[in-house]
Amino acid sequence: MLWQTVQYLLLTIAEILVSITGLVFAYSQSPKRYKSVIMSAWLFTTAIGDLIVAVVAEARAVRNQSIEFFLFSGLMTFGAVVFAALVSFYKEYIPPHHESEDQQLIISPNAIETEDEIQLSK
Image 1 (cartoon, helix red, strand yellow):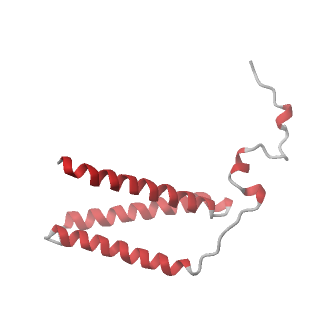
Image 2 (cartoon, rainbow, N blue to C red):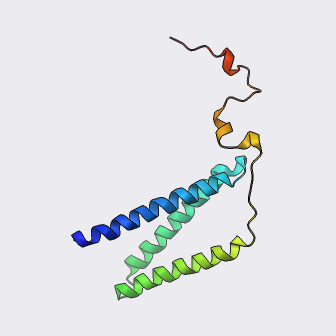
Image 3 (cartoon, rainbow, N blue to C red):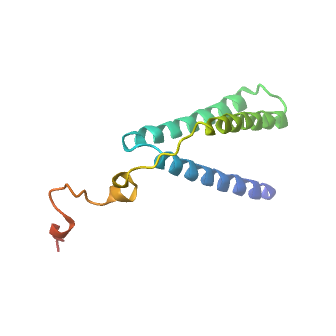
């Protein structure tokens, strides 16, 4: 059982890196009004992928586990090929300066109070 620790560790690190990279990319490349829709689409596709794995694994349609793993790797390869084909149609979205992520945290210049007028309560 201990020999599987390295595999689980590598898979966990890979999942974290892919999830964070994909979420940041999806969030940064979507217009401000579609950010929540894009994030929900990302999570929905993740759920569909997990559902496919659960259905295939529980249905026991494939008797040999190594063939089941090759099926999953084939599905991942198919997904990678589809994404590689879609890359040729991709156009980078560069948000206007007032829509960038760091600007969303700053008080709007059109707000009633400016940063100078905000009194800190003691």
